[in-house]
Image (cartoon, rainbow, N blue to C red):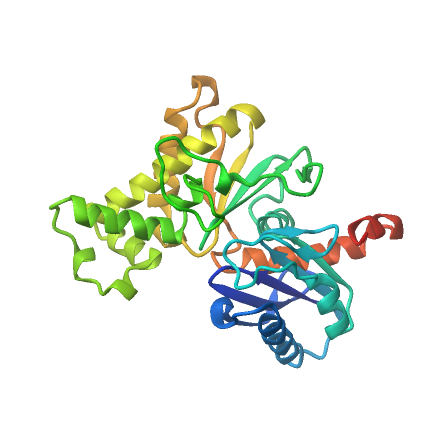
Length: 328
């Protein structure tokens, strides 16, 4: 019987879980609101309960558990700084789940997980140089170059969401002001719409929405219907992201830039507008070289699939390499 891997994608809004086959097929899935918990202990209990319920849906042996999470140290197996999660203290989540589920468990950054999923089962299968962005509660990013993920000296590389943008004074959940993700994220897009509605007289369907219905999804769908204010907000976001991507393209020459996460309802409007602003800021010989595309794994699946992919990848590694991943 084929084994399955449990892929867990921890986001600021939702925690998503799925059982994944070695071929990348999702066998079963579940989710719960991340903010339903107020403490590390509450969150851990919710996560273990959701995992056990899901595991009961498959009789196949469990190959392992893969976790994609923001603000984590993959080598130590700890979530130690995550601005959008409901706990402050360091959480040794890898060993916690390994013990609770009696399974081989690996931890990777959430954006890295999505990149690994894109490489193993998605649109980057034939690429050795690409960038993966996760657009959700915040902005995650992963750089995959020369055939491997760029991790840096401490496993912290590729924090594009927290570069500061000149002229941006928005408060970020990380405690600083001016971070890119305050402009390029679900919450950032919502803030831009609220600001535009206060500053502009332009008629817009956005004005009729109750505050709790003003979401990235509703803004994107209204923009696709031709609403000028919603399109203005999308353009503002895409300009910020495209301008931030241009220096990376100049330095790293990627083949593709993939967008993942819960903000992709705008489809081609999003990718084309980002590409427009990015190419406008590039040297002529770089323009059009890096394709901007929606993840072929879908807006909600790349993180889970990538976390599961890391289980299968580490299972194939020699014991010495696995020991490096799980060093304490």
